[in-house]
Image 1 (cartoon, rainbow, N blue to C red):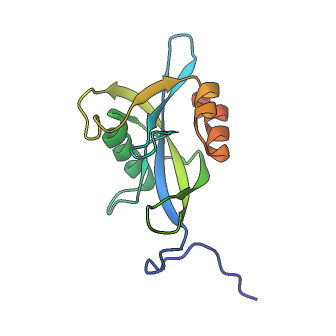
Image 2 (cartoon, rainbow, N blue to C red; image 1 turned 120 degrees about the vertical axis):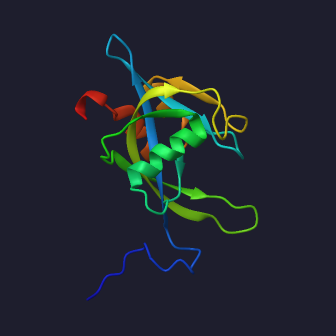
Length: 153
C-alpha cells in the first residue's frame, strides 16, 4: 500500500503544505547567558522570528540568513544545522489559510545594523529564551526558543 505525504511538489495546488526557512537569531553575553531576537510581523504586529520562502540557488540555512538581514538587520554565522520545525497557518485576506512548515536555523549574530531593507516595517527586540517563548503564538516555536542552547551547537 502506498502512503501519500501531505507535502506536494505540485505548486499548482494552493492548498498544499509549503515550506519556509527561519533564523533563530541569538547572542551570548560575557556571563554565558543568551538572548533571542524577535521581530514583529508586518501585518498583525505579532512577535515572530525572521523567516521566508525558499530562494533559488540558496541552501535553506542561507535563505534563513538572508531573511534575518532583510527583516531584522542582523548578520552572523550559522552551523547550517536545523534546530527543529514548527507549523502555522498563513492567513490571506481573501483566500483560505495556507499550511506552512518552518525549518529553524541558528544564527549567531555578529552585526546589527540600523539601516536594513524592512527597518520601517518591523520592530525588533532581544528577549530571554523564556520571555521569547512567551511572546510567540506557535507552541512548537515556543518550545524551540525555550530549549535552545547555543553551547550545544
